[in-house]
Structures are given as structure tokens and as C-alpha cells.
Length: 631
Image (cartoon, rainbow, N blue to C red; front, side, top):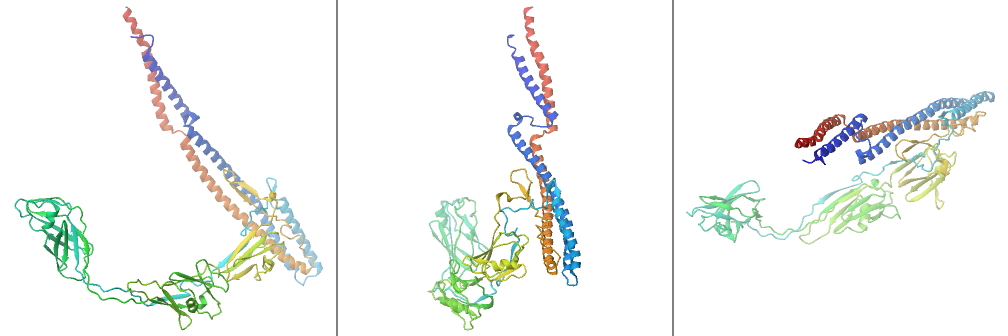
């Protein structure tokens, strides 16, 4: 007994301290509802949770931002509704003033209402505000450097004009080619298999035999049986020798076995064609008191089909005849014959890489067969024009016997779009002075710098190449149409100052750069180009009709843009809410405590703490037993 150090009490005290700490931690988790209350609880989990909390709160604020943006859009769109109504009335007044039955006095009366409506349009543009920001005076108009042809209202509608592949040229084989061959000598069919590795234990009586089942390609089974085995015929070569001169019937033909070492060959008694297919060999079976202790190593059966005698065959050249519809041949179409690809081109125009150019006039006098015949011929093929001028033949060149037939197929493919019909529309309402329109037509670039008040006709007339050559195509309405050429659209927005990005930008995400620009053009009379319009004369009233209708179109376009933006923001808010919900669920799984599980842990630790308290009291009392030794 030792009394200086009560080891039992020390151990019990240590356990008691651990249990008390665990009870304290469980109580903290249960009272806070969090599994992680400090970094020491889960360092990595705390870091991940805090990042998620930041993103969740950012998404929630982005949702509020998007809702505020919808309110702004609704404010602007509601005001423009009244602007639309006034413009419709102004259009009525302009049409009324443009008729010759009105005197100047009448027009002056109409002009007064027209001018008052213009003032009210300006008042709406100046006084419509959201959070003290004017929304219709042009201060929120986007004029930054990121405009494109699409946002500037330039659109190209392409209509394919080529015939479908196979429509312009159809072809068929008119003489089938035949592969040449030398004379063939008749041969007998054979089956060969190997018994290497086989071991048997025949009975001493000398009456045991070994059999193999051979399954032919059509499923038929035949059995090959050996002669009787002597006691010493145990190895593979000795067993194979017992099959010498044995016969089996296959498809009515007698096959006789010959043996070389461990290999057995079954040869048909007569020459001639056979059709044995794939033959498989089953396991060897021994009839009698003995047994087969080891099967052959390989079970493969090599089949050599028999052949009938045949005379030599002379090769016949294959001929393919193609019929051409010249009216459906377009520039850029290709015809592939053998290893050559021919491309239909304009006079002086180069073909694509690897293609042979066929110059096509397109005036109805072209003979495609003659043009192909005059070009470089494909390997081992001869092209000849038909007598009717609308066909040609492709013939395999003469070769030696044994040469395979050459592919004479004629393949037609439509061009790459250089024959399309391009309808290029210009929405001049969306274009800004200084914008540069660029059209590349068959590789030549034509450009024009847009001016305030230009129409599509002005753009069409102004498109010129670098050398001063004009495109020379008149506008039809608000579009120009280019046929038979490959067209690409280019655009360069008007140069603006770096601080001209005035569109209001809405933060719609939790991270930097996740913004959405809301642009509202100037909706006053200056922005609508109505400042100089009046109804004082019949001519000015006629001009006002066009100006008011352009203004109506501009307001309609702005309202449509705002409506589309509102719908987009609705979807944006729905997505933000779903993302916030999912991230909250993920953060909860990391940060929140499982109350049921933690309560179980708390109960366990509480019981252990109480037990440790009792045991500590017992351990402290034990040294007192030493006093009994002193009595």
C-alpha cells in the first residue's frame, strides 16, 4: 500500500476531467444548435462554412438588387406607356395636318396641341425618377464600346439556293466491273487438329478406344474413333498413331485420317468445293475400363475448304454514267471522282485547297462532261463526255488480271454558301452616328460610316471598298439583298469616351463582375428626333408623320427591351433563390448539430461524469485503510 501517490485517484480524476469537458462541449452544441462553435471544433469545416455564409448572404442581397431593378424597369416602362399614347395622338395630328383641305389657321390649331404633347413628353422624360435617379432622360443610356452588329440592329437572313446533293448530278453503274483471276486447280477439303499434351490410361485388356466429336459450321456432329489402344499407348504421339487410316463421313464424303507426330489430318476422298464452316473439337472420350487423364492442349481445328477447278477470268472495266442538270450547278459545288475533287468556279476564281478548278460560265452552254474530260484525270479512271452534252462516263482503266475493280462512284456536294441569298436588314433606329458597317462580299470588304438620320438606302449607296469601288446594290425597303456571293457582316461601334458607359449596372450575383446592365435611351423629344418637327405647313406635317412613326418605333423597341429585361430578372431571381436555398442546406449540413445524435452523446457523457465523481470519492477513501494496520 502506497499513500504518497494515489494512482487510482489520479486516474479517476483524469477521466472525470475528460468527461466534464465532453459534457461541457455537448451542452454548448445543444444550447447553440451548432456543431461548430469555434475553429477547434472543425477547422476545415468552419472555413468552408464561412465561405458558404458569405455566398449565401451575397445571393440574398443579389435577389433584393434584382427586385429593385424590376421596380426601376416597371417605373420606366409605365411612363413610356403614356409616351406611346401621346405619340399616337401626335401621329393623328400630323396625318390630319398633312391633308390639303386644311388652311394655315387650321394647321396652327393642330400645331398647338402637337407642341404641347412634345412638352409633356419632355416633362415625362425629365420627371420620371427612381430613387432620385432620372430614368428616361438618357442618363442611363448605354453607349459603351461593347455594341455589336446584332445590338445595332443589323441582321443577315441567309436563304440557301443550292440544289440538294445528288439533285444536280445523278449516276449509276452501266457496266459492272469484274475482277480478273488466274485458273484454279481442284483441291480436296481438309481438317487438321493436334493431340499434343494428351495423356490416357488404357485398360490392360487392349480393347479401349478414344473418340472425338467434331461439330461442323451448320451444327452437324460427326465422331472420329481410334483403333484399340495397347497398355503402353498413353502419350500423345502414340495415341495419335491409333487414328491412322481411320475414316469419318462428312456431308456424304469419306474423310481418311493421316498422322504426323501428334497431328491428325482428315482429307476428303474426292476433290471439289466444300462448305464446312468453322469446326470445333470436343473433349476426348475413352470407351472401356481406362480413362483420359489429360485432354489435348489445343482444341483448334484448322479447316481447308475444297475447291472446284475453274478457268481463268478476264477482268472487265467498270463503267458509271452520270446525268447532269446544268441549271442546278452552282459556283462552289464539288464533284468527287476517284481520288480527284473538281470545284465549279467563276472565271479567274481559284478553287479550294486540293481541288481542281472547273471554270463554269453559267449561261447554259457549259458541258460538264467535256470540262471534266479536259481536266486532270483521277488515278486509273477515264472520264469521257456524253454525246448529248448533259452526261459523262467514268471508266476503269485497263489493268492486269488480278487487279481489283476501281471505285467509279461520282459524288456531288453543294457549295459552302457562296451561292446563298443574303437579306441584310438595317434597323437605323438602333444605330448611332459614327457606327461603321462592314460587308465582306466574296473576300472584298465594303464599309460605310453611319450618319445621324441615314436610311438603309444611304447605307447601300455608301458601301465602298478600300479602292473606292462601290458595292452597287440598291436597298429594298430597310434591307439590301445580295445573291450568288458569300457575305460576312462586320461592325465597329462609334468611338466614345471611357466614361460613356452610362447604363445602370445591377449586381445580380455574389461575386465581382456578376452584373447585368439595364440601358434606357433618351425618351425626350431630342432623343426621339422630334425637336425640329412641326405642323405649320403641309410639307412639314408630312415630314412629321415619318418622324413620329420612327419615334413610335423607338419607344416600342425600348418598351420591348424593358419587358424582356423584366422577364429575365424574374428568372434571375428564381435562380438566385434556388442557389441560396441549396447553399443554405449544404452549409447547414456542415455547421448545424444533429440534436438527436448530440443528445445521445450528452446523456452518455453525463452518466460517465457522475460515475467518475463517485469513483473519485471511492479512490480518495482507499488510503484510509492504511490506518487499520496501525491499530
